[in-house]
Image 1 (cartoon, rainbow, N blue to C red):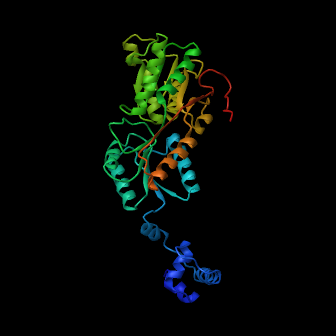
Image 2 (image 1 turned 90 degrees about the vertical axis):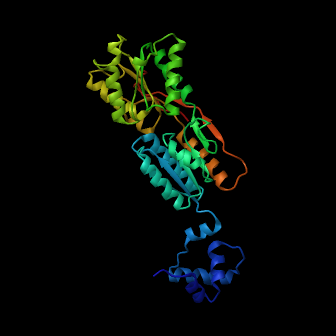
Image 3 (image 1 turned 45 degrees about the horizontal axis):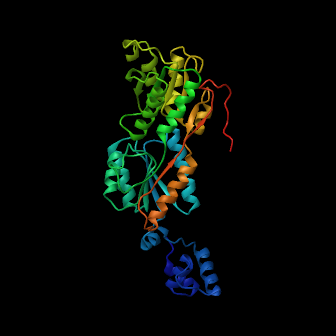
Length: 350
């Protein structure tokens, strides 16, 4: 049976209120001799104060909820790890719900987090449209690590990368290698970050007067399987591209690292070598991409900096900051691997 505050008080010869002052560091001062007696009684009896109840009485649980589509995608996994580390550093915990893009599971996790009285909620994808709408009508501080149309959500802070600009850099790099027919393996549609990355591909191809027709783009899930299927559809003999007499792409811009893993597999199945026959540049710049075979060239999202900023913005709001929702946009930078044709993997320099 759990030891109570009253039992500690009796053991130390003080009132239960004094035990509370010692455990919580106030609000009233406690003489050093009395504090030592209370601490000795706590150690002897093995008393563990109910921190959750105390936090609820104070209006804060120091717990944040996270809803994410997947942790199989290395970007979301690395982001979750960075958020856990930053929140822990500031004395908070993180409760994670993995939705698998399932709306019923999404609603279940959201109810669970709200029932647990989390101080705020972080969403890692604009896939979570229904949740965004629900939270927009609530008063719980919410932050989205993704881009979303401003007319969709008004009360949500946002932290995201300039996806369109990053995509243009990726395609520009492929163009610099002499590629003009560049296919696009894109994420699911319509999702704002996918729209931005596809637009970056289109715009950069148009700059040099190169093809960016619908036969050169395939949409698929953010997964290895999705990347494989989209690449087979783009490069295979039965593709829409063949029917339109569009030349086979000599390079691919892939909108996520996890899809790029599948794209490499598809190229091997088709007897094509990367980068000799098909060059690839992807988006995310995850640590896992360095261990692909060959290592990925990818637009890196600054995950640690994004997580730090996200926590800072959210905790400001949970702490009662008078400032409203805020947006922070980061730039992606190209990390050179071996899938683009540059040769040996070039690790980033600090």
